[in-house]
Image 1 (cartoon, rainbow, N blue to C red):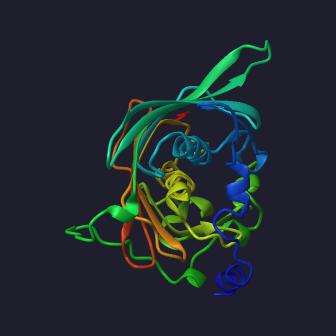
Image 2 (image 1 turned 180 degrees about the horizontal axis):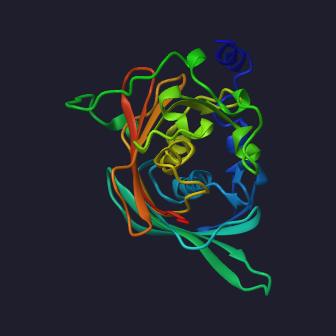
Length: 286
């Protein structure tokens, strides 16, 4: 696995990677943060929803007395663009083991009017304080070895407009979920991949917010084309991930009325389910 070996040799540390720099905020006043949304995390012309959720997640980690997101729900109101943005946070409740807050991200339109892009509500705690007892029927996705999977760099050419975020991720897709790339979608609504950051930075709770929304849409394997904008996304972070590549599995069971759901699971190298999510997304039919 030459890609994995290279990432190991040049691994960035948590707190000192491109992801950390591009999600860093500057506090302007209590509960108010400025950020310049990086064009490096765009898909076509829109900023990726997982990256945006990580930005808001970092702001809430600073504003709340607990550092780790346990559950965070986001409603995507308007499409975010690279450039200046303001995040405003509000502490709803603080407790001994959990604290709850809300946050919104704003940008300005062409007329200089403030526009709300995303609004989130989240509960935070301390993942290291959770008990070790695990009772589950969930099982990690079965993936071929990484060197038998395929990423954007293995194709004849990058998907138009998608190379910005693709350059910042290590994604190796299961060939069984790649029929859409050769014009033969399976119709199953599944996507599975090895996942990491391209600079080798290990995963943490904030980067898990990116991981659940970083793979190609399951709609591609349903035979649909074009991007699938997120309407709502809820993420549950279940454990602090162990070092090494993650395995991400996403499934869609129901497309109806121009909307579909995507259920994601994220597993670490210890076969631990570290994050789950569900999102509702709009499908552009026709």
